[in-house]
Image (cartoon, rainbow, N blue to C red; front, side, top):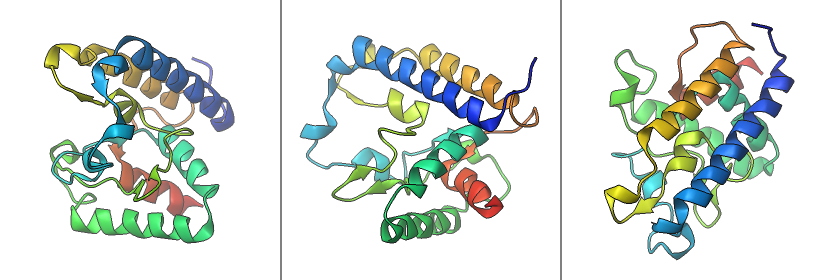
Length: 177
């Protein structure tokens, strides 16, 4: 398979995200509670016993690019939360990272998700507060999208890269800059 540049990969990732976001919005979100009417905005993003979002290297690059557009003081707070999350939740230690949970460092009180419009990961796009299990998007929908992202990631970087928790993936990208 032909290799892609990171720039080409980011463009294709945006298309995958956009298509996935449109499908979720069209077919499922109307059954979910709106984040705008939530009594505790960000509760799901900040629930350290719930969040377990892993991203590919390409997604981490897209998130970092979105963070680079933030005002310096806000960007500094996010980077501090990334470091703090890794330590507090022992995310960089050996073991099954899918068994570890953390509060998302990308959520800012009074603003919300800092990458919502520009680089929101697929599991976050897929998530919403549904009253009935039957209203949830099928697991296969997210799995299919994540597989497409993984294949795209492999066309840019070395095959076999694993998805990492958001804070760990971002720290790796930031430390390379």
